[in-house]
Length: 592
Image 1 (cartoon, rainbow, N blue to C red):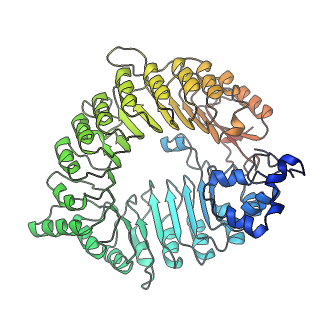
Image 2: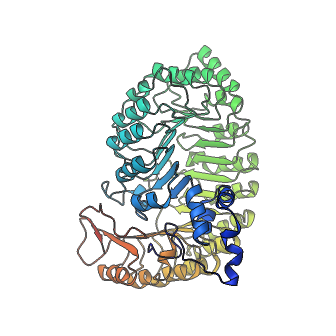
Image 3: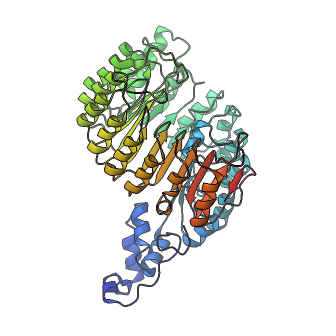
């Protein structure tokens, strides 16, 4: 988006003048202090952005009172523009790579390095307290800058980030004396040891959230134990697989106040006395709301958890390959679940138990235990999904991996649960039809968008023609994010979505027959969206160049790979930006 655009939140709007219509908005009616006081009560990022567009005085009031900043694409704006726009930021959330990078569709060194942001923050925001990064690259040098530049720094969250090692975490532990949160999630690297935990000062006691469940390393347990014993306000503790059940028991004795717990491994076996001690420790954690981890758990050890299950609202069993019988017994002790994540090893029978035992359930995610086994005979089907929908009428978020589905089942599901805001159905075999009728799955997703009027996020799969996208364009008027793979018949499908979904912000497409005509049909929409991703489609370099020429405010990037021939654009990333083309693009990224 152009820096001078009226809709840019990083530049002031034009003076509204003295017209009669503008009088009610003239902030001269209010002292600056009063206006700033009123604006300071607005928490929503969207509402604040809207306030800043009213007039210059409201813009300035919003500017001086904003302390939290959310940037959904690190290339949509530059650090310099942010620093000029907002002088008093204490908390920053910054997202980098597009979501399809999770599926290895982006080279590791594509970009989204946080270093230039931290250098700028160190100059203008010495009072920074929180930094939350998602899909960003952050190396040890950047973590050292973060650790040494902000004396009052309190919270660091790293979700699906890369580039750092044990050395960077050591700097955080050593220098961030007021740290209350260290949350590390979905980090896929083995370049760690547990030594960093020993670097917290002996008098350090401020931690409230500690999550290192994803780190594949041995932990010096005595150091962790001493840290937990000092941090009396600790309410979230998620340890990694190296922590045994016996060790976890000792941590629970020290921290019975925990609200969220990620266990370690349930291996090796316990003695009868250890079993009783673990069971007692869980029973004494009186108000546990979230439980995850449970690596290597077996049916014989699940009963140790029962005493802590009554207050659970979120149970994450995605790393536990539970069978249906053990899963059913566990659910009987969890009457207050709102969120449930499971592996498909629970099968349809386990999901039937969900429908019977979890009437308050609002979110369900079912993950594949082995997504690459094309011949797997076990797992979940449409029967389990229907059973959940019958008993969990408050369900509004679903992510469901399966190998078969029917149109009739999906229609039944959405009729039972019409309040879906997020519906992500992933039929794992591309192009899979309704297995009973052998017809396309068009009517399934047609029923979703017709029935679920609050729908904000949709992922489609199975055998789909352009009819699915005609339904989406006609009925999905609140849709914000659409993910498409191996679907569609022609350019018309994508055109229907771009023409019919006024609130669409993110469109993710892979392995579809959409070409230049589809790409160029969004000329009037892309500036209102956050991003468009297209890979393995029928888009050419000529189409991308034409888009870039017609819409100079957009960044149009073509990501080249070994198969690039100079004609086809195999991976295209389009996004709005007030900063212009990015300055750190590697050679394989061509910015048009």
